[in-house]
Image 1 (cartoon, one colour):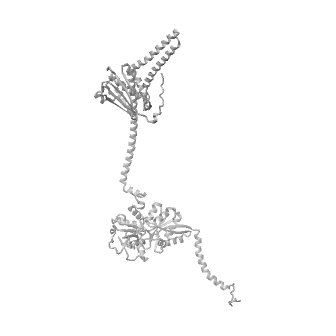
Image 2: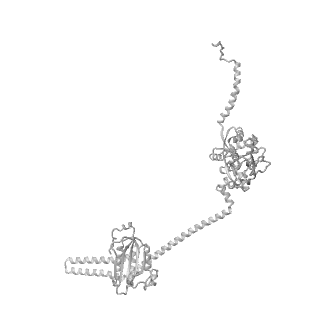
Image 3: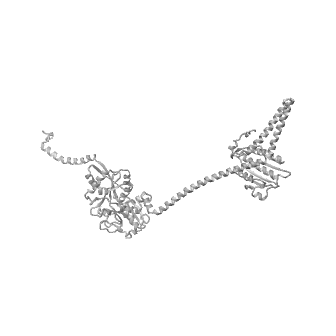
Length: 615
């Protein structure tokens, strides 16, 4: 059969031979596809294990260097799927803290920090097949451009710019120890320049003149030369100490190699399986293999000497190291602190005890003063007793006379008007006698001191009423100059009456024996005080008496207690006032004291006169 063009039409059916040939061409492709799909399908059922790798020369170099190790682990432990996560020291530390990694491959310094801070454990240590022992596998190299003839030794780096990847890299810290040994502090005597990863950036800084020398990991220079990234004579090594067991040029002492690290949260069965697989690995690319983990004591000594990482001054181990280094000074300081604490507690106890004793003594003095004040009041009342008795006898005699008159009028049958008048006079005289008795009773009663808003007009009028009988009995003329209204004062009424009567009584005794006896009591308001003045026309104050006038137990009166003026001054001062004495221009003496006026709120507390109880 043919088409319109005359070409034969091919049948859709294949011959058996053609079918076999077609299958033979498809089978290799299908087999390759099956081999590629099978691991992927199996990986879905494998447990992922995350391994962090420190990439000091960049992610590509890290994957190239440690990829064979992960391939061997995946082959040795097919039930797990090992994946790699590269990064800097800070990135890997943060990943460990966040529980995002199961294992790490990192430098010895970083492992030490993880061991102390996160309880990490080294399962194995990296070692070259033909290299030195594992404990002497890693160091640091300090390089400079070969044309820098001014840089030959480590001491020549003083004042120079020193480049490094980062201050927390193990290479920089190893170099810092050697520089310090040569008297060059990398932070004080040199100018550090940190360029970051990869390490080739540090070499670029040297080429561009931004730094004079640089710090790289041991053997990194040789690796870059082998990769034709650095010329064989472009850089020179400063401070190189030849070592037959170590083929690379280094400027520092050697430390244990990189560690394969297990973090704290990794299950123990997985850790044992990984450790066994690592130690069973055969040397791979680069002729490196894993051996039993080293103790990393030299790394610990490096960090302790530099006081960095876990041994920084204000970290847990740093404080312990600091305390142990200065243990004798710390012991003395602790003893001094304990002694100071004991002394402070003892002083506080003594102060508390002596304060209590002082308060008790003050209370005893207060009680004694109260007793002495009451004794003075009784003494004053005793001096006025005869006059007061005479004063009371007058209303009583009048009462008796009016009562007898009423009896006689009633007996004669007189009208009630006269009797009613007599009874009214009897009541008046009885009230008069009752007022005298009330004032005497209030004056001698022993009440606790209490300062409260008081009307000074009523106070001084009552004091004059108590003193009036004594004045009348000795023919003393008392002149009172007391305004009808004065602002309120805050005072103890009885104490101020006592002071006033004591001053009036002293004035009475001062003028006794004179023909014209005169005493004046004047009360005036001056600014924010009430001023009270007691003036007499006696002989005045003697010079020796004026100096000792207010001393306790000093008196010029025969049989006197010598407490009146002393207690009076104490009372006035306790009220916030002051008591003083002076001679007049003419014969006589002046005693003056002032009392502060109460505040405006207390002025309203006594809006009406105080009620008096009749006797």
